[in-house]
Length: 403
Ligand SMILES: [Fe+2]
Image (cartoon, rainbow, N blue to C red):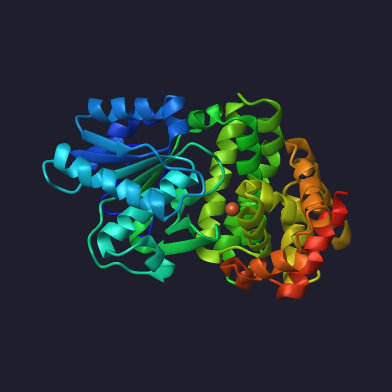
């Protein structure tokens, strides 16, 4: 499968390949790529994936250099450091020329920094100038994305999520030019995720699927992708938490993550991600954990909308939670209960107590969190209109639900 030719894939479209990274040479070969700049993070270096990838690239006779210091929740600082490393590599390793390919190996942070660095190189200025959707006209090197977590779906998207240095809120930079040309899915790479990362990224995938399923921007195709992503994750998430080495379940989670990522590319996200961004900015919670805390109560809030209700019901039925004869209320209840059960299994429900403490002990005002959530770009695609008051209602329900 890896020998598929990708020279003709147009900008903005990602070819998804499944297989071992041992065959990365088969991906590069058709392009005649002679120089590769690798973007990764220290954790991926420590667990050996980055070194293995470098060896494979050298074996395929590529000239290789890289940047291995991407941080979690990357900001402009990471993008600038990555481009400084690339400038040095051009002088020291690439004979004064731009690399013919950029390869990002890691979680969403490494992939997003690679995208952002490409964007700034093509258009100049700072990454903070690129919020929203743009269109750089300069030619950019093809990006190959190799995810090592099953969560963000960044490997199939034309968006990079970057954090604002001062507010810690994330902004999205979208451009067809930075969509990876190839996403190489090797489930064995995800076996090294610590349990809490498996839990957090898996819950993020489930959040992507259930949010992309119902947004106002969704299409029949994106909703089908979102539903299939949910069904895959529903069958595999408990398995990867219970038995980390279950490669079949790991593959299902990785495919679910990419499918949900494809769905988001067309349908965007909703209110759970708006609340999650507020919780992450305020309390530095891991993104997936924050999404998980918000998700069940957002599903409950949205389910009064008939279209969203029918889509949730359909997802619950295809995941095997309910029979076709069961009433809508029953299906929605089962769906919400299942998400809460996953949160408990993952150990995330402890964070709900932390949220309660922040509000009732530290006197963080729910209104302030709701105000930040209402500013997030994802809120505008939620199937049921959400204003500050609605976010307050959802946040109060989140706190009540687990205390
Ligand atoms: Fe997410």
